[in-house]
Length: 158
Image (cartoon, rainbow, N blue to C red; front, side, top):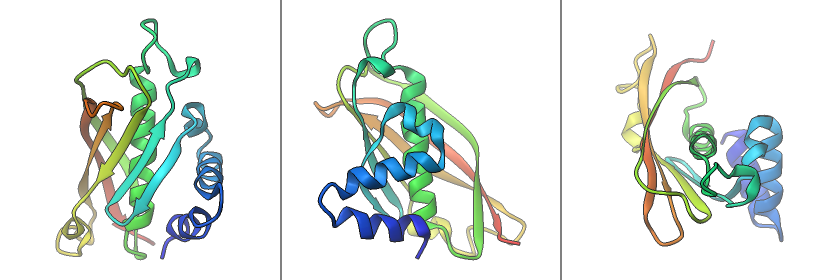
């Protein structure tokens, strides 16, 4: 089991454990701390976090800024990748394609998802391969405000 998934399982069972995990995760990649992510769920093939709507992530319209949304999607994707990747592989983000579909007028729940078969040896050759991670951000009322794909480059760990 990965370090991220192990830490998640240990901390999320504690009072305030999800908050503790979220702070520790943001310390690993400090830019994530700018959105103050609150992780809700991490398991193989899925990660979910909330970006609180607050002044520090607002744009000129008073909604959650597009780049803050992308930051949240990337944090969710990173947690998913760490919780899912086989021990003999490593990953790095290769690209992100997103569409902004509505104003982000509330807290935003960022979700990253993959299918188990995407992580198999057949799908990821020894020379390395692309792995698309589906991502979306959703307002409190269920409206999708951003959606897209983050592509990972997955190679053997050497």
